[in-house]
Length: 217
Image (tube, rainbow, N blue to C red; front, side, top):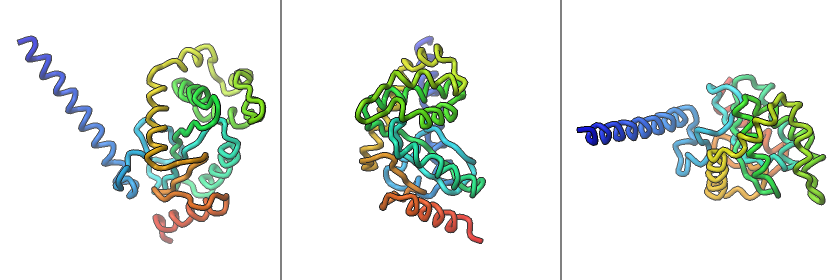
């Protein structure tokens, strides 16, 4: 009888997990039409970090690398577009750790998320990037002097960086990078549409076209 009860309990847990995953995907599909496409789950994962309103009808998915200079340059531009269109844009960040030691910095960000300091840490990373992410002479350890500026408990951050779940997030994002054929950072998709020509103007036009399509005047 004990083993039967255990089996039933396991089955219930599996059903709850399957239903929860299906519900999440259904909610995402309802909000963003592109989530109904083939390979839809490769765009947004449940653990992906996002910024902006959950009710926004325009979803920007950015595959980024914390050590990428271009990612750092585009981040303020994206925030300006979001500020100019309040409530209409949601930004989802995914990882494409192409640079040397990029996994190291991704683990910092994910560990910072446990302290509720994800965006503060990303801002500090991007601002201090020239000091630790030089292409000719990278100095990854130099970043530690800047992290307290994000309000982090650095000692706890170091412990949390070893969490095996973070490695799984990185592995999943790398798999999705391959699925979506992302070859450089930042890699942008706006409501599932890839940015074909890489420039500030082209990105702005793609975002604005989706805003017009989803928020007709």
